[in-house]
Image 1: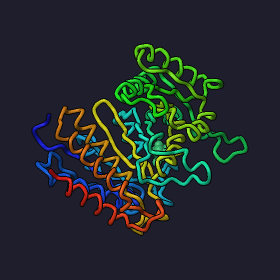
Image 2: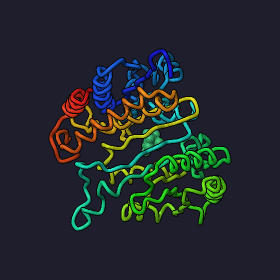
Image 3: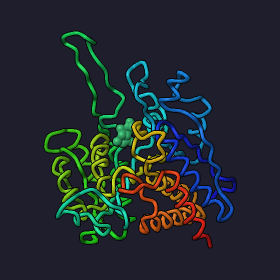
Image 4: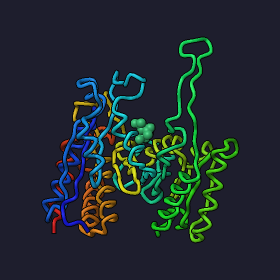
Length: 377
Ligand code: IPM
Ligand code: MN
């Protein structure tokens, strides 16, 4: 347990990022009122819009603050027309850059449907996804695979122009991500909703790709150290159907970087949409937390987007800090936040437009903050 307050570095970023982060900070402040606040949150500007104004993605001080913080919260980055001279997304430093520099190898994305949340599947399949059968966590490798910064363009503009992205799968990178997945499967005593079996599913394309064969071999080798966890396999193409048709089968799912990127957006539909999807980017010594939705320029400035993904990102953050520092105060705060969020979702008083409601972003934040306060011991 740390004596000093935990230092949280907050990067609201672009578009709707600042709108959801504002509500997150409001809820954090409500939690802090309940007792000694063991954290202080400091906001730093940065992202694509900042780049358009200032010619840099963020200030060196902001970057240094991210490196030294106990935990990092990012809203969203990306803005129309904001690109670096090499064509990269301006703002990438705040997300992809931190993943690379701080070696945040595990992108941990829980997918759980809370009572009271509506999803958009229609007709007779409406009951397929229920709060009882959607409760999994997708673990995405976050530092290599197709995101490896080994790419480029040859004979630019010429008739023989070639673009190359290199997919790198390493032993170290794969071992640590599959180990993370097996550890997580072990820490979820409930197992999969279908049969309560503690299961880890390896999603890959090992019927075609060599990197995927290596990924699966490594999954099997490390998995032998976890005899209590069932090893399960899916080719990524088939997985997309099974995920939607039979989500109750899954508890922990592990995938390489790009595949994990794609399947987590798909999985978000099961939990009510991207408005509920949060991710933790976890390394050995650092971690960054974010709502998975982007900056949504078309909704920016309208105070209408769903801030719950940010609340879930903050819950993951408090829980991670609590675990890392063996600090029960932080774990208790994560529990309080989760219970306030679950209560608000269940009573349906904070439904934003994506949920068929008309509650604004800030009113949804007010509501959760009020529930936090009302549950104060
Ligand atoms: C995500 C996002 C990022 C990614 C983008 C913003 C670079 O889609 O976190 O899933 O591709 O990883
Ligand atoms: Mn993505």
